[in-house]
Image (cartoon, rainbow, N blue to C red; front, side):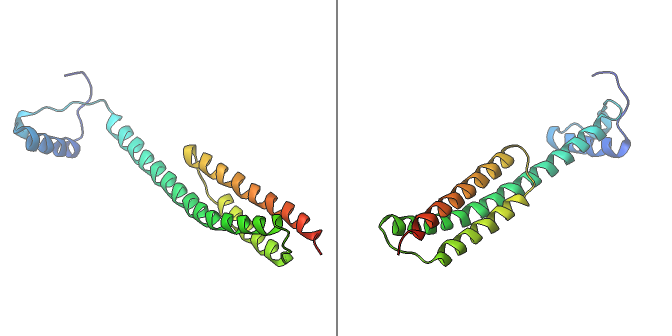
Length: 147
């Protein structure tokens, strides 16, 4: 095969057993070579990769949970928008409660640590919440002009 240091006996034995199980070649007839430290480095990379994947998965789940809640709140904002645009006076409390619920979701998003695609999804959801909040502010201003 190639030049390099021998793999430690325990790892070599496990590898030989696995090869024997798949190929039928007995362990005492096998020789396993590898580069020193390469196996450890690969394991560390694999562990780090799994850790990153788990963290990203947690971030995706957290963002999805907030998105689901914001979807429900968006319906509330749409109902307020319909009421105000039809000239119906809405109590200020409705706007305040909706704004508070959106702010809670914004705080949840702020607490989510994310990288890569999960970070982009979190950012998109933050912008979405901010847009709904701005809509509420505009609607409240329009609503305040009704008697």
